Image 1 (cartoon, rainbow, N blue to C red):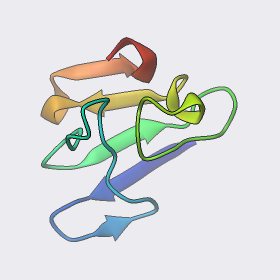
Image 2: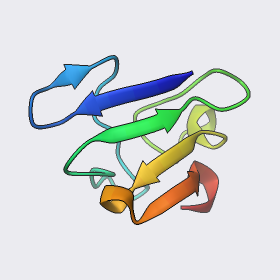
Image 3: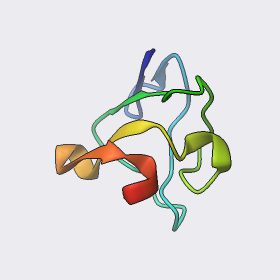
Image 4: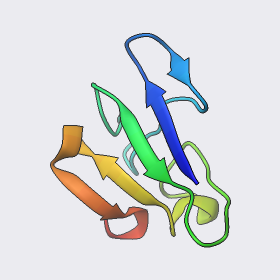
Length: 68
């Protein structure tokens, strides 16, 4: 299931997500899939987030959270 969040307006189904260094993944918008297990967490280093497909660095990266 795709999830969307806009940090500028605070609108979306979830809250802003953070990389392994606790920095926001994006400044424009977050778009991600919760992966095969259907679970997610705001921090990418959490076990629930490792299989998520994420968009990061304002679109410069798209792929598995575990590889970001």
